[in-house]
Image (cartoon, rainbow, N blue to C red; front, side, top):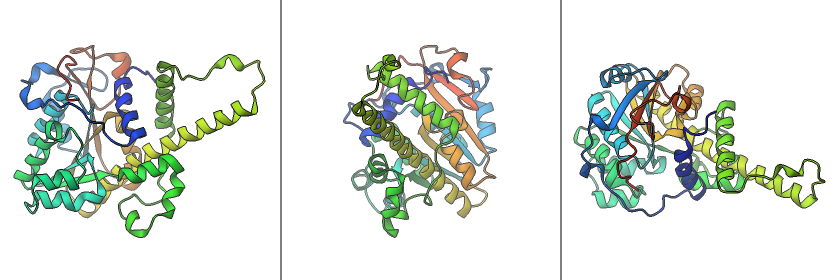
Length: 330
């Protein structure tokens, strides 16, 4: 796999995966930036040019459309609202990685005008960049009486898996398990695992933590062997935690579609969760094999406005390249 594609996204993913909490940040709302069609270009998976109408036509014909974003890309957030508004009808639901399943009732209370925004932000554990990046989606849904799925697994359980492994979830009570996919959830696919391990290795190399390969002809001490074993176990637990996020979002989407026939879902997630049709899509195929899906990967890249074949090929059914020169929201 080419490592350039997800390098910046992986840095953000690692911050969330390892710390399981967005850091404090200085926000810049995309609403104060004059974003328009000059700041993005739409391509198909093979790099051929496509139009917004092409994308909307295909998105309107599938059960689930995935919008894979970089969380701080203002153009991505502009496009998400544009697509949501363009696709909206009484059969569409919005689904978000940014809210967790155990606060679904809080989100519903806000959408139904039962609670104020202040209490939504406090009780729903909204991300720090909610106001700048996700509030417009929620407000559009609220104003148009559209459902919103709090799709992600609760981060406290993702953290638990990262510390103690997937089997630790079996010790949770029935109330806690209500907010998780059926256990045990499936492991990451072979392709997804390969991408994940390659990217982790690349990040370790960049940070100077790459294992020393000069010990090939040297005897490895018991201490070195133990350290390597512990490192491998930590890596596998991190992958299992990432897979819980993917499985949790897939389970939320599958459950909604099962309960609401003839509806469609527009799901927003970090691009690593859906790029190449892997991640969430792997799990969704297991939960609901008949589900038709479309992946839109939105990436800010120095190649803008050109499609970089080496790094972008087949990253989504559509790949939208955005202007990287605009200020990031964090």
